[in-house]
Image (cartoon, rainbow, N blue to C red):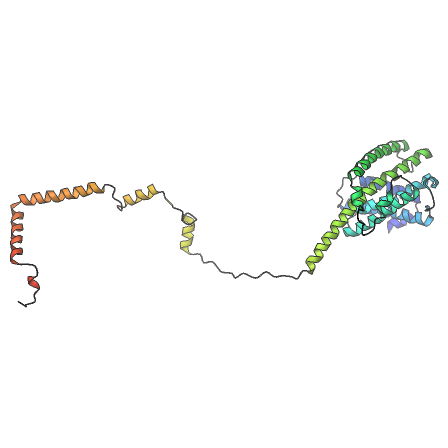
Length: 331
């Protein structure tokens, strides 16, 4: 509201020059584009250029029947208004992106149409804004035309030459606002700015068109997801796991995985030997046992007491045959 009040006391020239200086600072600003300070600068510059556009329209400064040579030098700068506004709306971020892109596209196409009507350049500008919604077979889109290799190289070289020449003219015109110089220098400066921004607008339209296509595709995918019936995943039955003390013990002291030996074969054999479960010198032990038996037999043969007992036992077996005591008094 305060800006509108200040505009009432200012001339068209002052309003435009203030917006022009601010726009130049925005282009060279290193501030993040999403920051509040940067967005405030953008909004202020937009306010200046919107007010300047309203004044230009109310004064009817331009006509479709005019040629560029008929436009006074002091009014040439106002032809840049749609280009500046389109560039600023691309830098805004306080509303949805698709709306900003559409507004910027309207301004850019308006700028190219004005430049075409006034014959600012020999370039065929109509191909960038007379494209139908449904391109015919073989017809290239704005994105394809503007991003073809030959077009990009030609625009790049031309922009570099234009930037160099613009800096030279600015040095001649000085920093005063409005520039103080002869009319021919001023006119050359503004015509060069018009041509420079034609190339800038073509680049903006190409990138803008690509971004709009991406946003439309994302909206289509989102619409499909919204239309898709909500599906609930089947709930899996929950089985609690009971952890016993033995399980914990196996987890801690065991190998941690099944079917893997916890000791080598040599370690197992040594363990069995120490526990007496495995006898390595079996044959030697057997021979020792036999030797013990033979020694005992020889000792019994030399001992008369043992020999007598053996003879008595043999006589007793002769008198008492096997099975006699099992007749149960049956004779």
